[in-house]
Length: 246
Length: 93
Image (cartoon, rainbow over all chains, first blue to last red; front, side, top):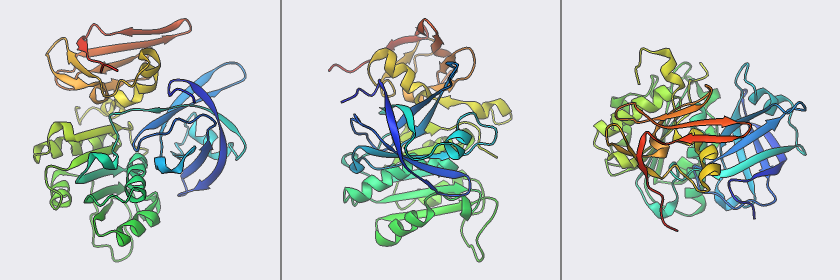
């Protein structure tokens, strides 16, 4: 079994498009030690001349999947790595992967709830691992996801999230579509702010374990607001992805 | 974070260097509490503010912005400067 600090060769087992700019790669790993929801992997690409570049990708799949993991990659225009993962990589290719990494941004059902997840854009990826794990483990802790995206076509995993919400009375999702809204939309249309967070977290209460992931600006606003709303600082866990793509 | 500074969006956190530091320390560091040598605030490494992409990476105290950890990766090894931390507390195993 490989250590999480060792690089190992993963084989791309499958690839599927989630949106027009987001793709999920399923990686099969020969010596995968298992992971916890919220952790990520580092991926390393090395050119023939020895030049190498590394990126981190949150694991989208639940640990219950076994020795296969999903990573969901947003295509960044002019990016060094994501265009390669979108346009060049095909099933059968091998990628160097290290992980799983990180114990700080982790939720598993044994930690209990309530659980409040705030995601912006591709920040929803590690939160999805938590939600998939919550469903697979049969957890009934109250959970809510506040998901900010440009529009419904950019909401990664939307169909799956809506299905989970419809099937589970203890789980709810609130979307805020900041640029384009579906016809007849009566939900949020603005960027995440304190008032929105107060409304969405209200049924869960300030004892909720909260996880915020996405563009740095969103994470800063949400983390400060949640502490201001009475959530204990050690129950606000954050993972910043840097500048948003827009 | 200064909302008027466009560079502020590039700020990450300790999760972004967790793989590098994990390889150095042989253990996950994101849950390791560290005390800022400047202001005394204690935060887990995962919560430190990270600036990457320069000649090295720096992790800054969320309370006072002082540099807590500095990381430079060179062909001959990874240099880690923790003088900005009064301590890093690793769990006994």
